[in-house]
Amino acid sequence: MLAFLGWGTMALVGLQGIVAFLFFFWPRKTSTFGSRISVGTANDFQLNEVRYFVQGKFYLVRLQEGFMALYQKCPHVGCTVPWRADFQFNDKAGWFRCPCHGSTYDRTGQIVFGPAPRPMDYMRMSSEGGRLFVDTGAIRRRDAWDPAQAFKA
Ligand code: FES
Image (cartoon, rainbow, N blue to C red):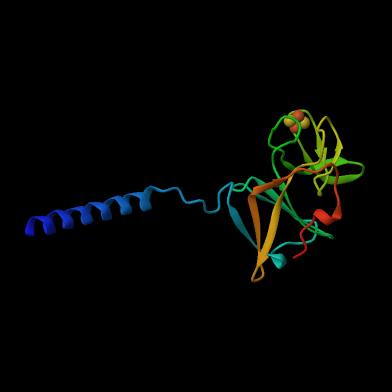
């Protein structure tokens, strides 16, 4: 009987060690690409502001119609598209412009010229208790900009 208790205790201690090990080393997806990322409240953003969230690989844009979370990956062949506040086109400054082949997009992610076959992809957004979230695992394709794509906070 005592031997059984001894082995049982040792097994329990071993099991606790395994659980602690797994808990410590198990990858937790927080604020990384693929997870749902908190970006603040609507009032944290100015109208027409473009803010880059490097860990989520997206730009959050506040438009008249709402918010767009634009995936940084160019729909042409996948280069990272930077926001170019300095780039001038059509008497306006501020465009997304791909450095690889020159695809250029407006603040909505709509392609205005270049070889990309469609607008920049965008990510699903939600709100909870006044906070905005971007689901970087939910990337959507589209054929054209539509105001219905913007998230109304
Ligand atoms: S990868 Fe962006 S234009 Fe070609």
